[in-house]
Length: 201
Image (cartoon, rainbow, N blue to C red; front, side):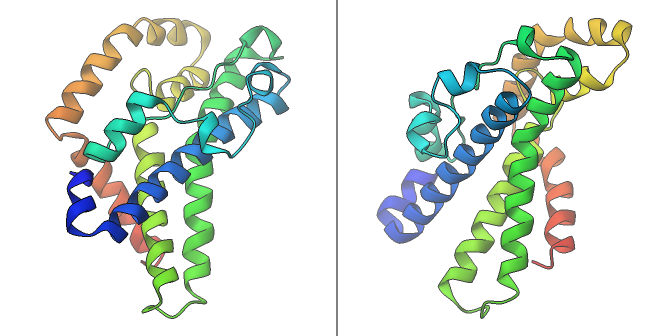
């Protein structure tokens, strides 16, 4: 558990906690920013178009983040009635979160090439790359309430999309089962290993 590091290695605990908080904040900011750009003023009115972690951290999600290394941010609310193409735009807004984590990971992986491998900053960047990839991949799992569910909905034809939405109530239970049985690792790790190798890390 992440909290155990507080007593074993306080510095590593602070680095991990900071990395996770920044990653979640970037993720939620991206949702809010794109929703605002697509014409929905709701996230801006709720103070979500910001990188300030205070706007994005959920109390219970943050507590679990520090205790177990697994948590979540405060979901960004948006109003589909403001969107020109609600089905497509909702998928774009949903994809923006994982995409922001991938973009941050790629950017920092590139910057690592200019740093000495033994440098502390290089190690920190590698940690941020790793957790942003994990967060992005995890959120693209196509189960409600994860972003991947809405992305798939936006890509499906209207008829299939309606059938897809009928699966939403079961998503959280399947997701909890996968998390508590650690089966998410079987989904995430192969993609994560490929991404880390592709980035040269």
